[in-house]
Length: 145
Image 1 (cartoon, rainbow, N blue to C red):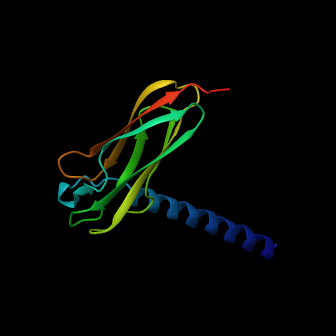
Image 2 (cartoon, rainbow, N blue to C red):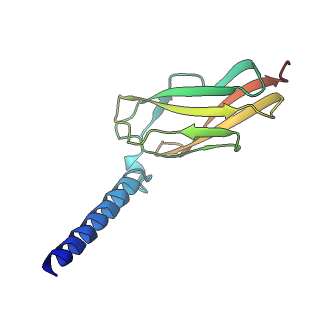
């Protein structure tokens, strides 16, 4: 009985610690309410880019490079695409002052013929506005058989 009790106790502690770690990680990527902890970001690439023409069915990979040009860590809480055909990625850790980072996205052109204008909404602890917009456009041509 003692061995079984110890195993159950250890399992409970392990699960509890894992939950605490997840809560800490979630809290660390939440925008602080105190605006003195806000920072500035400088986009190294244009925030409005055109990728020309691609054939239907191709996935377009886009990346927007930036530097934390402020004095506080840059916390990117969320990057949300304007539609379901685009999947965005974001840094998982705060970006320290002076360091570079990248926002990536993948646009699925299947069934999206013609001009496409997409927006990535970057929610971060940035001065002026916590919402930064990144735009890209692409024209999708019908597949040639």
